[in-house]
Amino acid sequence: MFISASEAVNSDSSTDANISNSEEAMPAIMSSSSSVPPAVLQRPIATTCLWAPGLCGGPDAPGDARGTPPLRLTFRTARQPWDAVLQGRTLYVALPPRVLAEGSRESFVALLEAAEEELKCEHVIVVFANDHPERAKLIRTFMFFGFTVLSPTSPLIPSSLASGNVCMVYNIEE
Image 1 (spheres, rainbow, N blue to C red):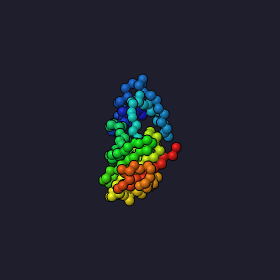
Image 2 (spheres, rainbow, N blue to C red; image 1 turned 30 degrees about the horizontal axis):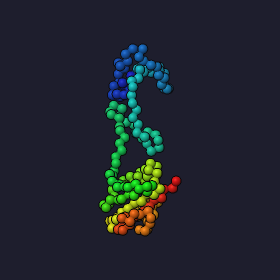
Image 3 (cartoon, one colour; image 1 turned 180 degrees about the vertical axis):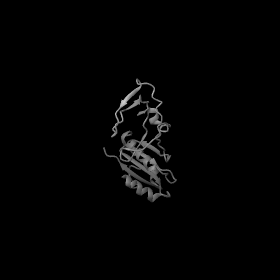
Image 4 (cartoon, rainbow, N blue to C red; image 1 turned 90 degrees about the vertical axis):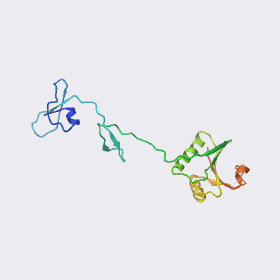
């Protein structure tokens, strides 16, 4: 019994004519209950095994070795501008007047991490209008992140931001 590497890849070929000479062939022992002699395989060709990782860390499904390998792509689901001003060790972030897009929470968490690790801030203060259409939702969301509502008379709030705005502070612990 003889099988070539090209026959193994292209299963539609069923002939033994692809074996060229014994110098290119490598013996391989196949477990079999019959008295068939060990198979001789042709020198293997370089192949790429394309497995997609599954949920448990093992392969999920085999890929097609004849096509282009799959690419892993990352898409940004939201593009949300965050206007911010760094004054001393306090970062003031003004929220846009419209409703925040999907993915804004993830980008805001990244902003908090940058404020803590890169800018070495002590406080992050978010500012949004009292009449923002999502005011209650924003307050709940930022309280979930660890923000607290500031009094308009707080020394952390400049007088220009105190009237007509909701200001919330996040204290960064060192």
